[in-house]
Image (cartoon, rainbow, N blue to C red; front, side, top):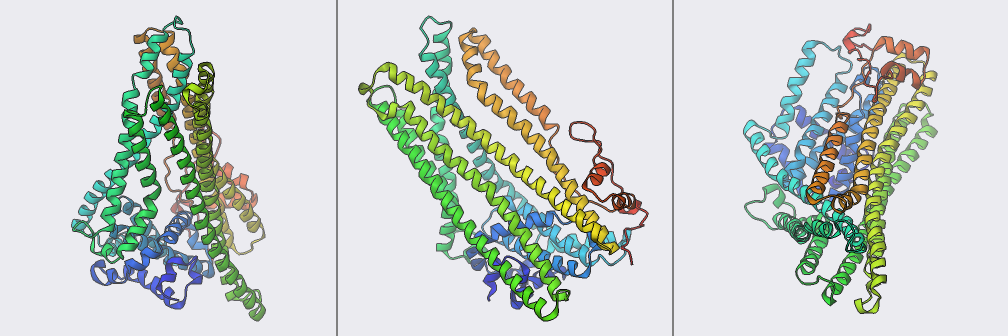
Length: 620
């Protein structure tokens, strides 16, 4: 096994001795307070890291969730085996985050470095605290820990003051590209929404008698934004295509803009990496931009050119179906490969455990160690399954939308029949039905997308409550006092996090309801405002609608969870009450007394120093 295997390993237990030494040395380098300028930089092979970037990205996401779930207050009550297994997994997480950081730094992805720095620092802090768990804490040791870890963290990443300021400037510069691309995507999403919403309003207006109320005024008002939205239809796509093409070329061809570390990656590998990341956007944006440009200037109107424009648009909607199918199949292949790797490693560990049990008995240290490693790996697999499940549903939602939109647009265009081959009344009726289907499909897809985000959070919340129930059962059977305290803190952490997720679900539900309500009724509001009111009054109604939507959003944002990390500390009073009545409901009554919409009356948890256990010392 060579160094490559580190980036494709599912757990520390599956590493060879040589690779385990490399992982340990990475943290020891950090711990030795060495600068990254020479020795540390030489230990990273950018070409090898780049080859395993796909699995490295997955591992980074999974281990990020894993370390966020670690509660350092439990370290005092862990047994030696639990500490040993956790330390090894933290070492691997530290190595993975560091490798991901170096790869992104070499490729100048400054906008993601800050988050990775935080992950590296948290991981290093957890390793340090785990090592010091048997040392009685005091103000002096706490201050020394913070000062020591901060200095090592900065030196490990080479963040001297000058370099730190330079990185921040680059991060701001690169971040602008990310922000601009996101802004273009958001604006284009609103434009696409109004393409179908405005088309529906225009179709309904065309079916009204000429003498009906303010019909002519409404037609003019609704068509007023069309030159602007029509220009955006190709400008935004070309702009986004230009940004992605520039980034692809920037990271493919060597020049003064390229860092020395990135140059170590073969040019072919650099190109394939960029192409893999941007191919769908490049293909989609370049083709749609050109087609929209042609439809805006030439293939427009009610004649033969307009007919050709509709046929071209239908062809591009079919292309969207193909691209979404391609992306979905590619993602399925990637997940299946990673899942099989995890399953194979679990089987290897289970086989090793069976051999150990047969030779040394079920209570042997090696068997218990393997059991703990299997448990840790299964937790990663379970999280990977949940992440993929909702990612898959989201991709299916996009695929179904592209198919449904193609069908609805086909109806809108009278099944692409020439204008002289269909009666005008039939064309208008089909246009109304097709326009309504396009609009409804767009709104429903947005609603399903929002629901899937909420469902993923709800699934995570339920998993935490179920895990807490299992730990409560183990608590009732446990006899070791330290393990009982460990299980108590784990139950408390799980229920506290589940409570925060419940608040997040409520917030997301309110946002989704507001968005769907506004998107569903906005065309009707526009229709009513310009048909039944004078122009100035109609504009006032539209303006008032936007102001009301902003006001509602500002009120909803007051209940937005802050996302702060929760540290579940130990308190003797809470532990004694839980020991008397070991149930999940006991934790809920202790920490979350019902009060207000989000139970904001949550009691203030005492710090370890306030508990009767002094500084939270484990039982002898």
